[in-house]
Length: 324
Image (cartoon, rainbow, N blue to C red; front, side, top):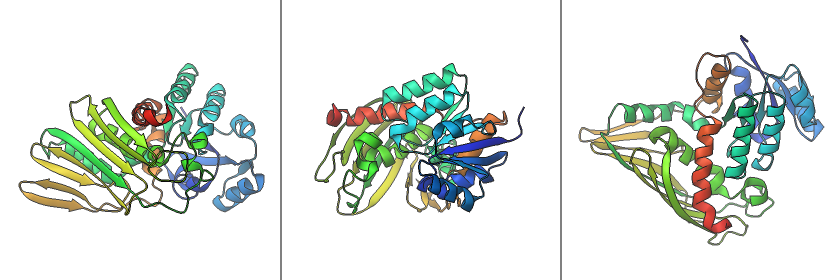
């Protein structure tokens, strides 16, 4: 059995500078040996700055590199499926950025291809691995708030200067949707991790004033397999920035932010307990460590194609009225 996983990155852009690229180098049993970007000079620059031995400007060349054991796809969603299928055909495990694909159908094709090739598929819903959310899970699993009854999410943001289709995150032909799919997916996936799969979901999406094609507002209600109820409201054309989640049980509640550097708060009859647990320098490193351990047969990954597909199914349902 191997004692080290050698990674190649497809798309060494902004997300790989701090969040993920260095994490592939620093995780135990992990090594970054090659990067690829269509602009060869930018790929060469990244390799030089990060001490990566090789760089490419063609996807096929990186995938074919015999020293690359596993592929990290760090491109926008419009290319996730094609690059995942190419890696699967080469028999190389895939770690793909979130959201997993442009649609439920794409995600199913990606997962099917990896299963047929007998290789694992992982997805970068890295908040599952962060210590602050591990603490929230510990409180839930220990019964700190009793039997869980419902969860509610509020996420609103002021419009930014990036308000045209030239910004890929709000261009549905590149991202699959708007900011809800980009950042709302993190919250929905985190709730899947904390509370289990969502059994049924319904919602409504609209564009309420943003000068781009995608939705900017989504309202949702859902029922988890456990019987827990949930509601969510995301608005990216609001007057202020505010974002939090609250899980309520029979003996208390837990409040936390998916994105903000704020304390997580446990409230019970005994009082209020808050913990500020900072993010690590490279936020994907805890998740990447579980993936490397999984590939080395030393542990189990906590974000896979199977779990990410569930999140995509929910998101697609919630925005279906807008894109139907």
